[in-house]
Image (cartoon, rainbow, N blue to C red; front, side, top):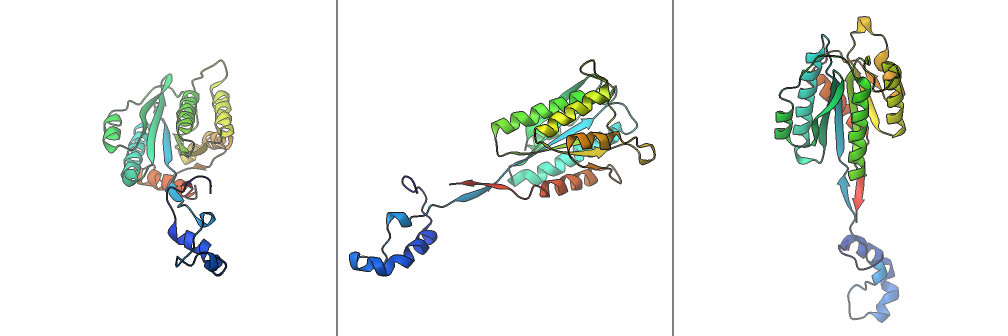
Length: 244
């Protein structure tokens, strides 16, 4: 151990010193237990790594637009209630018309979320690429702030983009951005909102390029979405960091 121990682990120190007592006894008759500097052990505290769950939601016009937002809002509030005594945070990016916006910056505040999620407009085109780019920026920025953060991106979409940020066709551009996110080693999950009878496979293709799973929920409700996110969070394996 280098330097002076700031928080001695007495049980570990005693265990380390115990085998040497017979040898040390002749030299240390004045003490009941001879402890030397090399025996000292310092407490190592484990703290739980924080999850950051970023929802990326298609708010463009469709029959399911309102349903997507209601389910996502409910899942966010449930996760924040879970995170009351944890370090977990939740964030929301929506994309519609010509752009993507951060509706809810990363937070663990229920009050802040309630205010931010109150009125979210839906309708317009589907700038899928813009949503993915903004989500990537949010998570990379948070990972720079805290290298121990465990980000999880939940993308709620049918995978059909129709607005580009460049001259590239919208769908090709979105898949290029997805590959960039995969390269950044960001964990992703796609929740496919396409009706099963009309599924073109676009959400699955997006998930394949992201390197994550694609799920179609039986019912796109807050409880179902919340349960799926919790299941994915358990897949992180409870990673923690050590604080000496």
